[in-house]
Image (cartoon, rainbow, N blue to C red; front, side, top):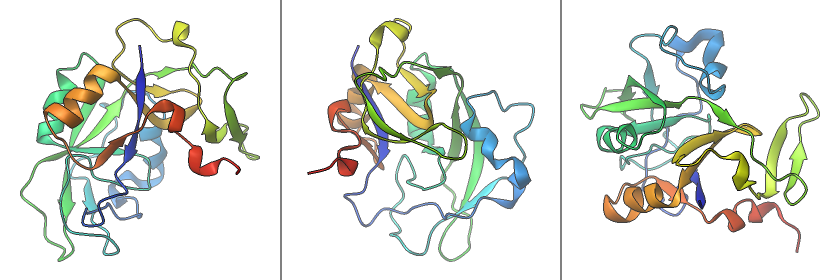
Length: 197
């Protein structure tokens, strides 16, 4: 099965982005949403994300951010919930540029579980000097034999903040339902901005 890396839409400058500051409600445990572990027993109440003043004001179905989380609209939540993927959804509040909480419903989507399926002999990547994990890919090649049949959405174990979406689900999200804020890149193009000339 073919997969798209789920990336943020960088082409639309009018989109609102989440602020880089982690919501106070997470305390020192903010990293937990990147682990792929269930969060239901821990997730704090009344989590509020602020929108960045450095970006646009147009709300999207997937709010772009640099903090490694999926914050999705009610429309996209329903699509992901019906996909068969193991995803937890936690209601969150969004505060706009005027510091007012918007009425639209948003959820932090926690994709549970990790799948280690990078074909390391054919991929090209940098490792972190701190923990030895993949820091970024210049080229990502998957070993399809390691992905359970029928998987439509998952986190890559080698780079936990990277979510991969099956071709059929990606087409439904982007072309049929026209969800905004996310860019589904062909996997052979993922990381090309880091490749040499």
